[in-house]
Amino acid sequence: MPAVEGTIEIAGTVEAVEVQPQELVRLLGYPRGWVLEGRALELADATREWYATHGRPWFYARQAESFELTGGDSFCIDGVPFTSKRLRETLCLADAHSVILVAVGAGPEAEEEARRRWESDKPDEYFFLEMYASAVVEHLTTATGARLCDWAEQDAMAVLPHYSPGYPEWDVGEQTRLLELLQRTRRERWPSCLEALDSGMLRPRKSQLAVFGVTRHAERLRRLTELVPCENCSFGPCQYRRAPYRRPPRGCGERIVSAAVLEEDAAYTVNRKALKRWAEERLSLKTEQDGSLSAVFRYDGTTCTNMGRPLAFDYTVKLGPRGEGYPIREQHCAPAEGDTGHTYMCQYIESPDGLMSSIGGERPLNGERLDAVLSWRREAAGAGCFCEAVSRNHKWGLVLETIHYALVQKERARETE
Image 1 (cartoon, rainbow, N blue to C red):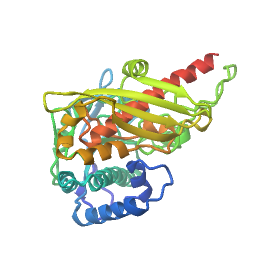
Image 2 (image 1 turned 90 degrees about the vertical axis):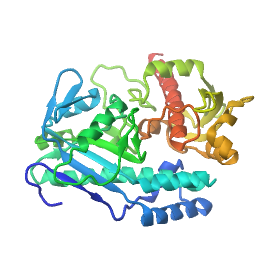
Image 3 (image 1 turned 180 degrees about the vertical axis):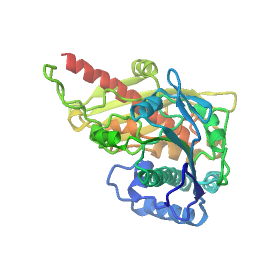
Image 4 (image 1 turned 60 degrees about the vertical axis):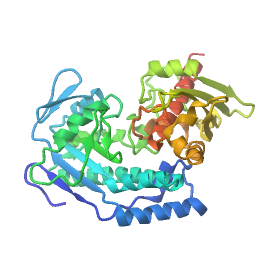
């Protein structure tokens, strides 16, 4: 990208997005290193071909005209206040002098086609397109960040990792203000339709807003690159993490304990008080003779329509032994015995077999170590029902985080023995 005088503003559509097979495999919930074959490979190839023909991915980025770290956990961008303790601390640590606002999207065509597939009783085709569009958004965010890095390096500056509303310690409700700020374009035309609902969720859903900090202290950042490799990086919500965080060596005189197999300083997507309650009231853990663990989590919710009928689902998870880092070996979700509320979900009424097949067949993070849930980037979803894939992923995330939290408490108890 050529150097830009002063501030930067870029926008456009992307002719081709090269989603790596391993990234699609990860989002589909297969184990690391899995090679698609048979029906799954056919669906993946067909999805890739459809999106190459019909998808309209886009991006937009512009540098803010003003940026200020204000009191508490707040900061202002172009005079608009935001609050995020995590992002403010990162910007302060790097002595950032500016920020770049970024928006990317897989395009409305993908969401419209996914809806048509669901309504046509094609749940498998629907699911593959949903996950492919998510992979496109991840790729666009990464690629846009790379372009910004190239621009910054020409002026001896450095670009920090991005952060987005909905990440830990940044309320997703502030997404509405961030989108309004982003759409105050200067030279470039806004490349696609995008709106934020009152809840902060974006429409089309396969979109993302992000803030990248910019600092002139490249030397300081180079000294901090020891924190960048995944095994030394404590930044839990990073969507690019592929290895668990390892603590640095303990200081002289500190008591040495057994090596941690779980990230104990985890950045969960929900508060620990809720996780503690769920672990006590909804979760049961059983250690098997071979050292593996069996977990059962009871989820109670309500349908979003039909007068909010109560429903109950059981999540069963089998984890490998502690010494292997608790790899996720088996996963299943099904209505609890005697539950009838699930039959009132709107998608169940339209396609009972299709919905139940999707619910029972999804195994996110299967084959990964349990720590992988900490870096699983998924959309927030408050719906109590199971009709949409985003809602089901959200619930799986809560289940796995509750199991993670419960096992961390066991780890801490071991350390005090």
